[in-house]
Image 1 (spheres, one colour):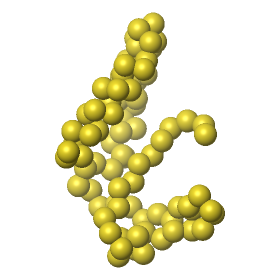
Image 2: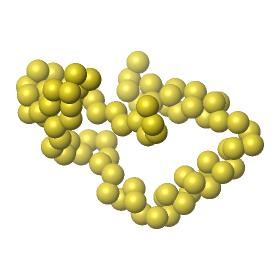
Image 3: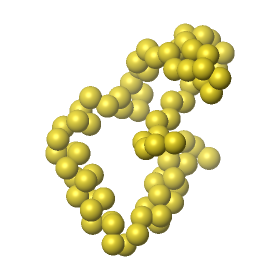
Image 4: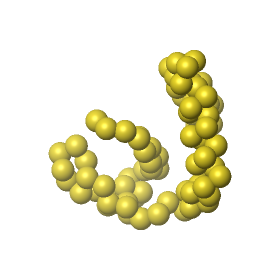
Length: 82
């Protein structure tokens, strides 16, 4: 399945988890974010990946060039607290 289809499926599943009572609030929050122009600075599909060096689960720092030399990289960012 292409990535775009997988992302659409994730969005649909996420929308179903939001209660009907909370959907208007979420819609307003999304509208407010779009109006704030904060999304103008978000990398778009096809943009070069900005440099980064995250730590893995064991606390070892990973380096973007090393990761890219091994395979393609998909960066996913999760909001919230773990």
